[in-house]
Length: 498
Image (cartoon, rainbow, N blue to C red):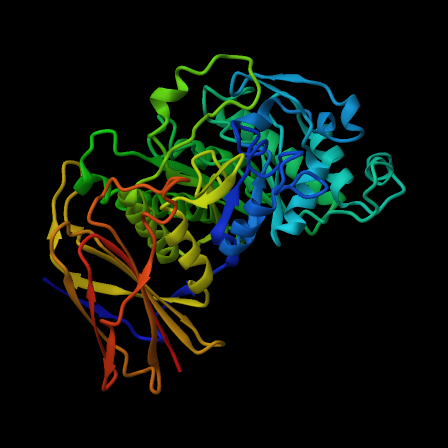
């Protein structure tokens, strides 16, 4: 089988915004406790922050992390997680049916983010709370001092403001499962008023309004249109959430599900631009795909968890090789929409549906860690309009599925070209060609391949490198024409530099 990639350095989709490689930490399961924070462990520092997790997060170069939720935030009082730890209350968390100890909170997360070389994306509670509480936590985080909540932060030992620049106005408010679930009209008005006064306090911040919790929601499209009709002038981004599963154990269909993401993004862009036209506005709303991942492996196990315990093993998907292939295709899809998707969060970061897993004796990379890392490290610059000519297949739910997903990113400043490609063919290697004569003087620097004959292969603490990338020497550039081979069922990163 053959595949041809056609690009032109002048045909651009858009510049990659670094925050497209963001992630997410929620007070859920072992994401915080035993994930990024564990007092008394030999690998933890003086604050109880796990150094082994920090090193893996820094390896990913995660630019921004959403916190503290998620469903959790809609019942959360942020004040419970600041101040002396011995005075912090244990609270029932209705969102996940557990007890939250509040031994880790806003100040600890800000410290962790600094050590992880990442920024904070803060979510405010618009479920059980509202405008006043959103203003209070913004004041606590961003004002220098001289006011009640900024002085509270200083009294808690944090003189300098945190300068949080991105704020989520609630979470999944369209969902009946959400504490404080609202209609589109109710939420849109609340988001508008909350956003307006938050920007009075700090005009430099960017605000994210809740879009649909998935493209399958009964209110999808009408929700976006009505919410935007209410808060278009106050917000900067609209969120999208979507998770993907292979409960049917149909790999061909599962690996086509990035087409679902592609359609979702295109639809939401259309809705944003409809409201822009309706309002005769010059302002463009961009997208924050701030929850996306594969999620289904842990569903049955989670049904057995006893309620009202603390730190259960919850949503702990153990990812396999085919999950990594789809994550690669999903990253390619996000890059294809780099002109409008300016933020995205792989949900989540540690233990809970995450690329990183921990135990009391160590931390390791799950299979999905590798495409996420590769994209974050090498997918920076200008996304070029990438046309892939290859054979297609039909699956149970999708038609005309390309065997090859690919995107090309040109980093003019570093004089680098990166080709990301997924071969979805289960049995056949694919001969790849690409005309790169516009990039005179470039040479193949590296070809990274993630491949395993077993689609269900996993990484565990006992076998951490069962699925791991290798380098290949099959990519050659001759006379400006790239010739390569994409191994059957593989994730590929072909790097070229001048």
